[in-house]
Image 1 (tube, helix red, strand yellow):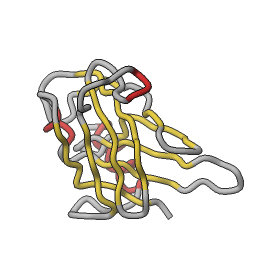
Image 2 (cartoon, one colour):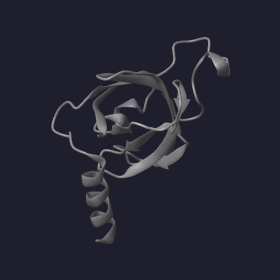
Image 3 (cartoon, helix red, strand yellow):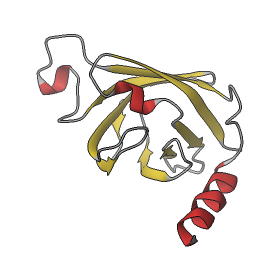
Length: 135
């Protein structure tokens, strides 16, 4: 069963507020398969998908305005996941972390599992996103 991490909060950077209303859905892998993670924007559109066997991992870079007016590149890294909480770093120019030479506090985000009004499974969000694209 998929688990949705929502109620995203952020720290740092001038565009962090654009992450409000976004969510990540995690599908548990089985039989040696990695876990699938789907990043959804605030209007329910799947913006990026990653398959990972371990944490940390990066979502493929994507271009979106999210909650803003201007399309920006988004570099999202997941640095921690458990059954109730997920966290990571974000940027609009590059990935953040010690492996890329960051020596200052990175811009960070956090999300809680199945919190707030946006809970639900991935299939419902995918159907809603597909229907809105047809209008």
